[in-house]
Image 1 (tube, helix red, strand yellow):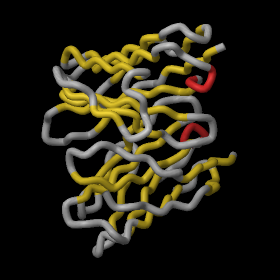
Image 2: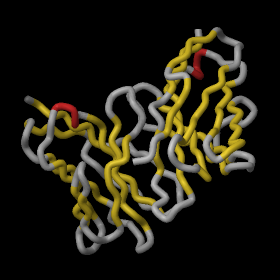
Image 3: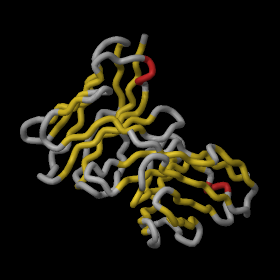
Length: 116
Length: 109
């Protein structure tokens, strides 16, 4: 299957700082990328969807000014958590989908964020 | 997208087949059935998907009933590394993936 990478795999930051997470599709061009969040013992929750070159579409309840998403190229999307607080501590997972007929979503390994 | 129902947990003996059921009684004609799994602290891994025919790949088989209201994911020879949460997702082609609670499969030696 297609490969999606994320960087960093884990990050610890102080409250009030901003954190950027990168998501890359390594062997295909991702016309659409997705960002999910997963709290302990819970399922994945979709945060936002972005198409290359367009503004992201956020799910209800997700603050677009706090979670900045940039999908500047067909292989890279970034999620910036601005002014992070302890309640933002979570497992963030990106996903990518090509524009090909199969349209299967492939997921990255996830980034664990801990805000102190 | 149609809602799915999966048992919260299942056990399976190592080396035996693991059969994971999924109910999607409100599925519509243009909705696909997808299966992913998530091993602890990792991102979901794509397993298989299908529309109405049974499908098989190197990881698993997907059996979809004729009325498409339910399906079964079969791992033919489960190993300890197959212990994970398995998600059955039904979605219209080109929509995003929405995850339910899934089934926690524990493969026991």
